[in-house]
Amino acid sequence: MWKEFETPEKANKIVKLKHFEKFQDTTEALAASTALVEGKLSKNLKKVLKKIAAKEAHEQLAVADAKLGGVIKDKLNLSCIHSPTITELMRGIRSQIEGLITGLPSREMAAMCLGLAHSLSRYKLKFSADKVDTMIVQAISLLDDLDKELNNYIMRCREWYGWHFPELGKIITDNLTYCKCLRKVGDRQNFASSDLSEILSEEVEAEVKAAAEISMGTEVSEEDINNILHLCNQVIEISEYRNQLYEYLQNRMMAIAPNVTVMVGELVGARLISHAGSLLNLAKHAASTVQILGAEKALFRALKTRRDTPKYGLIYHASLVGQSTPKNKGKISRMLAAKTALAIRYDAFGEDSSAEMGIENRAKLEARLRHLEERGVRAMFLLTFKQQNRKISRGRGP
Image (cartoon, one colour):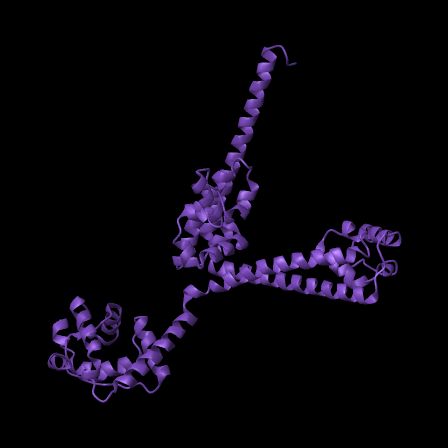
């Protein structure tokens, strides 16, 4: 077939132009191209086929896409054919398109093709279902950055105000409550006349006021207090935004990966997706890879030194692994990784968006964890009982 399309002259002997339909603008061309990519029948193509092909309904219509041929057959009752030979024929027509359609300069043809290709790529990027997990990747990365910044700001705030009122840091351990107290009171001399009942309990408030009267802290200027209060405002605002971002991440994870969220939680699930790059990339990983994802340095160091490889990576922070005893953490992480790998593939490729599979598998893992814990307690009891019997038999026990 390709020999027949080596030159425009040979191509013109095999195929002839039957009808040419022009697009009015790029939007119309993009809509038609998108419909072809998705295997749908556009309005313009439907009109052309009714006008041209309906007259020769007894002939077979060659189509490049089998799915599109099926749609044409259902909608217009036209006999369509698709085969490797038709694919080669379409390839030959595309290679000699300039010779088969006269009046189109090659430069204009290339510019139109390039413009349409850019529009189609932007459309795919914008509406592709595979790209929605980029929101999760960005959200979890920002959440980690906010946590680091909050820790730095709070540490600086406690150390800075600690020169003025060092006893307050030991009495109020919660960071957000500490900053709210500072914002409301300011100088420690104002603690005696301030009402902190909305922020602190009665006992803690009384303790703070008593400590403020006998504090060993140094005196600071009003300008210093103002700067400290400005830092407290920053901490409170960032904390509020962090809570809002966490709720957004929870909703996103339940919408995109509900089964993974049920299995390992939204934070661990989001970190797994972020580490792999996307949900589809994560779905391609084996269960053993999911288990140690995030511990690559430890894995390669263990392989290099020929020592034991790590048993868990990011999955270590899942609640099921945290509930288990140190002896069972390896087993639970392996089982959890296996079930999580199934949940990832179900979320990535399944059409159903429910979390029933994740709930069912998590219940199985929790039952397995209880069984392991009970067996460990039973084995420890038997061991203790045997040791006690041995002491009695030797005359040492009661």
